[in-house]
Amino acid sequence: MNFIPSNDISIIRIEQLIKIENKNMMELIETTYRTLSGTKKCIEIPSRKPTQFIIMQDKKPKFYVDLFDLSIESNAMMNSLVLCAKKPMKVVLAAINKRNNINLSISKISTLVFKKKKKSKKIVIALKPLPEEWLDYSL
Image (tube, rainbow, N blue to C red; front, side):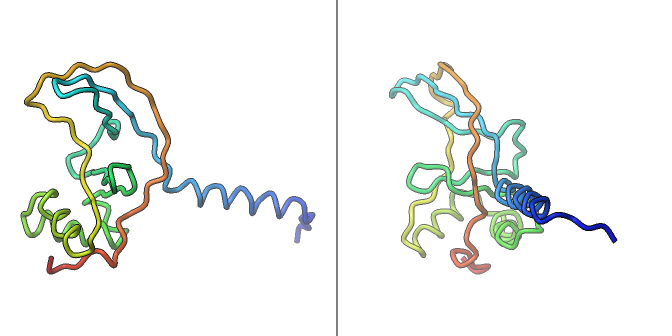
């Protein structure tokens, strides 16, 4: 049996805590576009899959949804609401907004208007899954 000094145990616990806290940290790309209606900022997932979404609350990135990551209960509920019910994400978010009196949206720059990329930078943000109490299988 090996004896570990108390200082080493605290270092191990701090390292574990850092790993736990950084679990929800995501590296995203913030791109500034110049459009006909002015300058817009859009936060995007690098190499995004069609089932991954950054959900904005009051125009700030707050939540991350991956419809195929069923290990998280809120993602499984969103999978049921979007894919199984064949509803667009915007329709599901509108129902959640109405039911819970919140302002959720998806960050997207329209592809139908003129846009020119001004600059891009990498940012690291902590995004959580959507709260389960906002979701219901019967939205």
